[in-house]
Picture 1 (cartoon, helix red, strand yellow):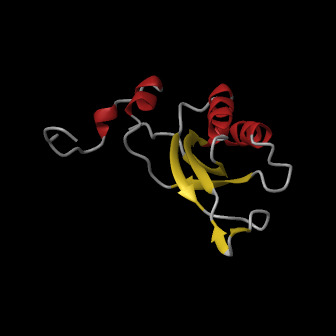
Picture 2: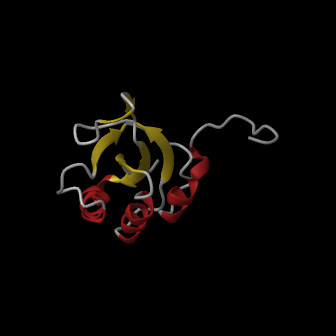
Picture 3: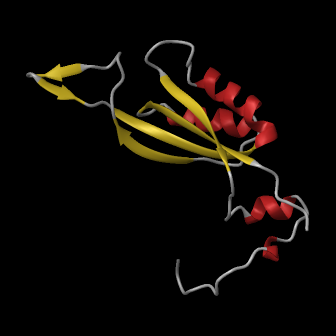
Length: 126
């Protein structure tokens, strides 16, 4: 049985409205796609108050699963697109994934059989 290549997860956290250029750069560098999640939080450069009440700036968390051999190129593209060499622009980090399921299109593109893993019978809907 041929093994599915190892994958990494690039987690990128940026100010709201900045995710589109980062997702585009990641795709141009070889990522298949990303998931964007709205979030709140603040870094040391964003401690603002309104009438004495702390404001938590809106953020976007971008999750991008990629094959490990593409990690360096995609992370570099994310860093450049997010201008992460400047303070207060965001953060990106890589998490090594032990196992990944649900990437059937990638498995097929590698010429592997997506049915080689055990599956439960699909239910109606999700």
